[in-house]
Amino acid sequence: MNEAYNNLITRRTVRSFEPGPVPEEKLEAVLKAGTYAPTARGRQSPLIVAVENADDIALMEELNIRIKGADKKTFYGAPAVIVVFADPNARNGEYDAALVAGNILNAAHAVGLGACWVSMAKEAFETEEGKALKKKWGIASSWVGVAHCLIGVPAGPLPEADPRKPDYIVRIK
Amino acid sequence: MNEAYNNLITRRTVRSFEPGPVPEEKLEAVLKAGTYAPTARGRQSPLIVAVENADDIALMEELNIRIKGADKKTFYGAPAVIVVFADPNARNGEYDAALVAGNILNAAHAVGLGACWVSMAKEAFETEEGKALKKKWGIASSWVGVAHCLIGVPAGPLPEADPRKPDYIVRIK
Image (cartoon, rainbow over all chains, first blue to last red; front, top):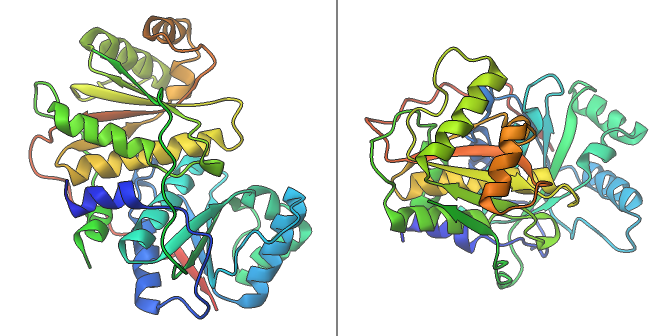
């Protein structure tokens, strides 16, 4: 199979990042790929917020740890976090946002970056601190958090894929 | 940018298909790419059902038209429909299923097929006819429909992309 296909098979979740900023050209490319994800009726309903501000990233991680009741870091030192929001008034808005995040993860791999979808963005951006972040960023309070996509240069080799479950696919002829 | 990246930018929704079956090797590749989508905690929670049975496809289309109140066909003569289901007991199960569908759409483009996410799968598989299809296919009634992915060989050139909305991306430094 070709490079475009193999990229989808070889992408892995990355949880270890090199310090320092994400190369700007690569980050821009990843963001652009997010905007080309399919959306219901082509309405482009989501919103993409790319955060490189260390204080804002630290606050998002703090909220995530609190919501999860985690006993360790959950953002793994990522130098950038791309938050994908859903429009609460769009039909299929959360699926649209998930597809945008999916394209971001695949595009990161295509350009040699690593990425990780960290969950509980909805809960985070419903807290008072999360709402304050939306206000600081100049976006409407109504946007619904769907994914925090951690982005950075992978530190070390990509992990091996687990085997796929045996009953993932059913064929009906 | 490279071929892997460009595939994400050049994918388009396809709504016109050549008659005849989907080449088996390509369909298998697309299904495999679905299983490599990221899922929460790597749990591979979704289920993928690839339907090539014309009667089953016709029934799914009939349900879709009824649910949408559509006045025309909504499956566009697609020779195969890949239904992606979410596990109702999986945390983030619907996002997992959306990412599987997203990989299927991107993989179809990578191997020269065309694809289209048709919505309202949840509603369809909650109807009595939809439940009967799940029973016929030998899958549990509890699976939640997320996407019907129409798959086929595109008839004609891919459509042009609409311009991206100007306020899709916010940068926070």
